[in-house]
Length: 151
Image (cartoon, rainbow, N blue to C red):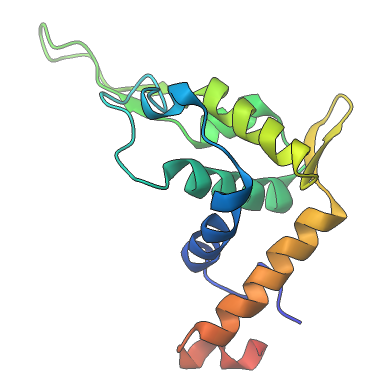
């Protein structure tokens, strides 16, 4: 049986996003919200909400229990320094906590993630089985000889 560690992360996230696209609804404000202070525009992907949800589900499964603060740090970036004299270095900026929190709440409603009191969020048995089933499907579809030993 394949697990989420047996397949490349980008292929797993892409397959999970297709599954979660039907299960999660993007809020009305989602198409206008930036994903962090360091961004200039909102995301331009059509399936951004499902892709971010799949990525969050994988991160919670890998590093959980994990909180919104730590996840926003992982989805952050660098914000440019001052442009007056061009001497200030770039600064670190966190990702949008509202986007992350809203997606995690939707994943909780789908019973894929649960709240560990005082520790953050962790994956449920249903979430783990969804990840492993999707990983098995991805492994079957991949045509990469170096991954055949996991099949």
